Image (cartoon, rainbow, N blue to C red; front, top):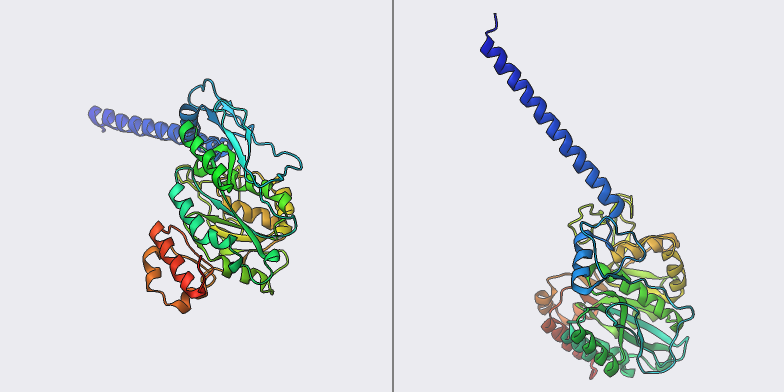
Length: 383
């Protein structure tokens, strides 16, 4: 016969297990609800912590008409920035066009003007950068971007090989820093400041604003580059003009079946509500990719139909897939993507280096200087 003590002990154990089960169930339901909630609402535009940070620091958030009532605390005195591209927007002179952006920062959009005949721009280079990286921009201007402007690098028919380099950046909200950018833009005429807060998650806003801006100039080719790579402009032009390339070109270091991060803490996070597939379509890596200007209209039209997400390069791959364009892989030979190049490139011989048209990313300033000097000697030019 079971003693009373054993019976009581058994009941206590059973109750403890039941209580533990209920607690686990409750936690699971809350976590499950929270996971679904994040998937439904969280995106690169309105991540809770990031939006609150922008609100507190800048007094402005870029939500593009997204709902934001789900934030943990109410936001006061917040102005929303929404980009609306101007119809048939163009510029006519060499000076920098500056227009006021209507928001609490009273900052300015800056658009450079290219003093070149339409239909004659061979290569437009769009470089992603951040306002504080003045030293890096100055170095690029004096190295590979300088080569982009030099007739010595443009073959015998310079009219057919004109190129232009533009730096894309956002607004900081710091009056001193934003004012310095305006002075830099007036001095060089190569700054495109877009109407969004400068942050990693807004790279996609910078890039697609730049694509809209570029449309009236009808470039034959567009090259998107980060500011921590080196582009051998002479080699790039020779490759583009050498024939045997698709008429509808989209090329770079191709990622095949890249896995999509569902971790909200990952900077490349994409929720299922933004893109439900397990893998991205094949796409060209963001540090350096190029496409033919005849695709610009199609890409811009396609972007109106595909909701944007944080991973800028993968998003373009998705848009390209929708237009029926497959990425051409030039990685490994023409484009060497290796984050250890700042040190390892010094061990390369001239023959190996001469085959490359793009190197990066994560190049130090010293590495960019070194690579430029090596190419200058290989090409035997004074730029």
